[in-house]
Image (cartoon, rainbow, N blue to C red; front, side, top):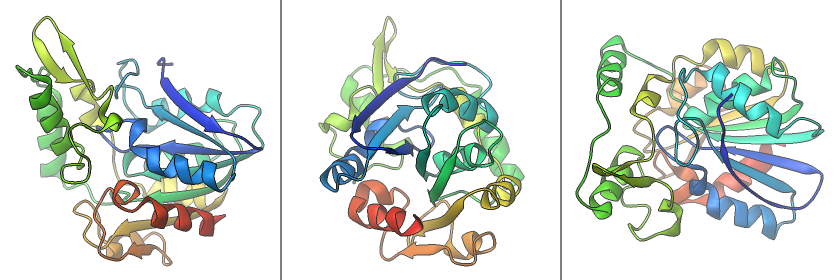
Length: 250
């Protein structure tokens, strides 16, 4: 198992596992964690998944490997609820199947990518095979991080949530994430079918999500919810709406 960097806080018997999307870090959940604490809803855990942020790089990056890393964080917990974004939604489904020995009460999956055209998969695999891109300044590396994570225009370059998203080494600044994380992902149908039998689950996306459409989601979840006027990273753009949606799934 990969060694993970984990943020956590809050109090109570219920645990909210907050799973970020591809190329992001657990810091993107900051505003949602503040709402969890405001409402005294329980504890929260927001890890950087393997290959991301301050966590260890370790191949492979399949859904099963990610879920196996996360399961020990939840052992002994009786009331676990997952809020997963994009890749995090897929990993949440893997955990919710019960295969990894944790009890998941609910899963709120946001922005789950449903379709993986072969040409797109090949493009991602080609990008993953390239060495990490280096930048002369941290500002340039952050600019790149904001672009690839879909946070451009949502998070200011000086925001504390970007701590740990870039690193400096002997060759300059680079993104903290392993380029090979781009090999992660695939159609969610099988995991969804298994997870929905084991836990209470709903899917959602922003009206202007550029990764998935509400029509695609409703091929899986007929009651999938659409956040009006929102984009892919709804939890950053409108954390209150995401928190309300997650509570409705409970």
